[in-house]
Image (cartoon, rainbow, N blue to C red; front, side):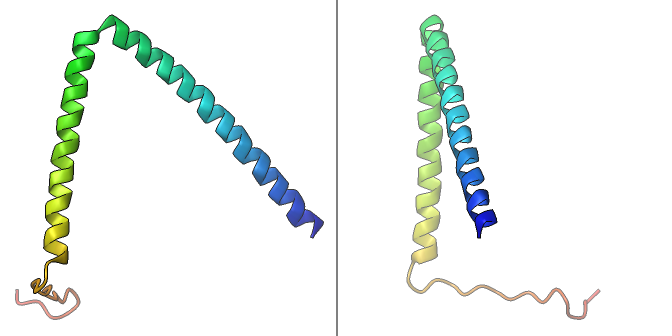
Length: 88
């Protein structure tokens, strides 16, 4: 029982350390992106627009698939027997 408690405390300590590291890395990344954005505003604008277009394309693709998957009267899947006798 004491060993389990010790393991839980060690796990909690590890989680806290990972959170601290992630926060520090995130802060440094934001600083770097901020400096880069200030130095290259035109490039940043183009990349932001391209990212928005990629996100819109992804959403459209996912939305189309979801409509087909959830459509009533959807065609049944064909079973392919990979373990059975071969015709060749």
